Amino acid sequence: MSGPVTGPARQDAAPTGPAAPAADAPRAAAAALRVPPALFLANLSFVLLWPAAWSVPLLELGLVEMIGGRTVSVLGGLEILWAKDALLACLVALLGVVMPMGKTLLLAAVQAGKLRARALPLIEIAGKLSMADVFLLAMIVVVAKGVGIGFARPLWGLYAFALCVLASMLVSHLTKQKLRSAP
Image (cartoon, rainbow, N blue to C red):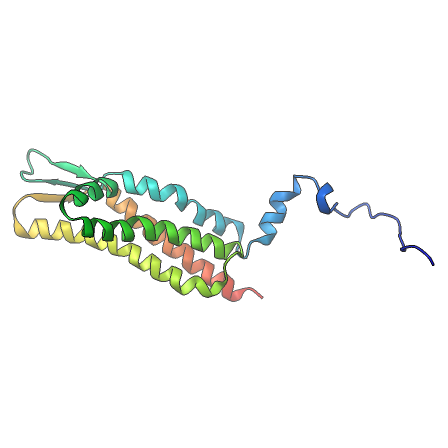
């Protein structure tokens, strides 16, 4: 009986197994992605962007425009709503906070190959429901201007929040295209 056949070790072969250097870990992680790394990182950036968008001033609300009013963020608006109407506060929290972050994390799981691409239609629905929060804020502005009592002025945070929602939807769309074109 003879032992296993061994030949000379290849000089250009990367070590494998537990002895592989830690420097190869990022390369291996990038190879496991089902989408380009830039697209994966663009999606993960929303983990930081969503909380920022939730805390910046969205609207200025008040009774007399000359005096100014109170600025409201998503989180501040939830606090105000909770005191007045807990059910509406829960709905806004679901649409404006839970859905966007959940969509981001689920999309990252699809991009990393941890979740099947069949989940993409559900992820897209979550993205569209996230946009409902922007429409709710826009309706507040329209109603306040139409009634003539008080005012509601959109601030830069409303545009930043809407941009985050739209950019997140674009990342989802690009991910879907990449996964369809993949072999």
